[in-house]
Image: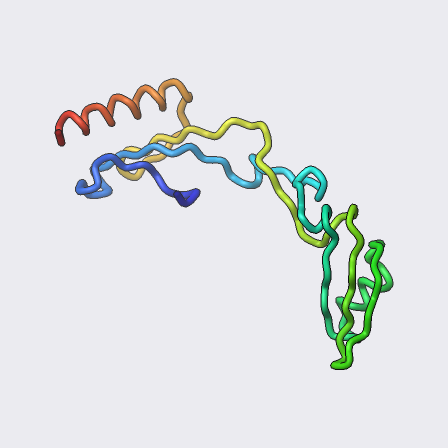
Length: 136
């Protein structure tokens, strides 16, 4: 389910008369950067190969500033093949969910408000029960 989606029990009711529930976990507050080892990155475990044009800015960055251990091979078509050793940080950004609880949001028509989790859960179950009872 997309991060901005609400659970709507009454699919045939217009949005103005509908209600919904959502547990939000925005990346800015609920995700954290982690290193390759904590992320269990395959590049960290196995090493990796990057192929770039020989005189590109990225290739020059790897050679001069990356701080990573690698072996470079030149190919016949003006490409550099960088072979990185295992056990070092790759170039990807890795993120994982932190320990913060999701934010319970209740929507009635176009109004959205953050509510206590217990109220959110109770209300969700009550409305779902009504829906199932009405729809059979």
